[in-house]
Length: 131
Image (cartoon, rainbow, N blue to C red; front, side, top):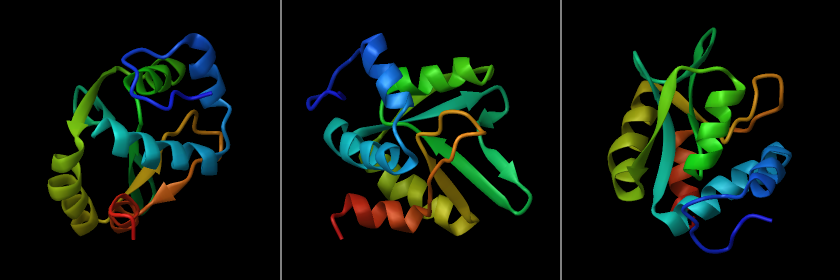
């Protein structure tokens, strides 16, 4: 399954396995892997970071690994590139800003028709701090 250690490149088999995880398992993977890797991956499009908008809710998709973010980009035909944010910067700058703006986090989404878990910035910060 998913590497216990930090890997620069994931095999196709690991990517396929990860894409089949349940929403809960994908959320767990994000939290545990970004804590080890000390970075989180986002998708940046031509107009800024890719967000999901659902009426009132705005959500930022986040990924534990570049290869999984890239798979999401190609599966959903998104024009964008995968960018990593250092975990310190993400927790100290991004999470407070997202919380202030009411933006939720979609934890490693695959496709829009699959159930995806959403967390608030506050909840993710608490998870990462081990609270």
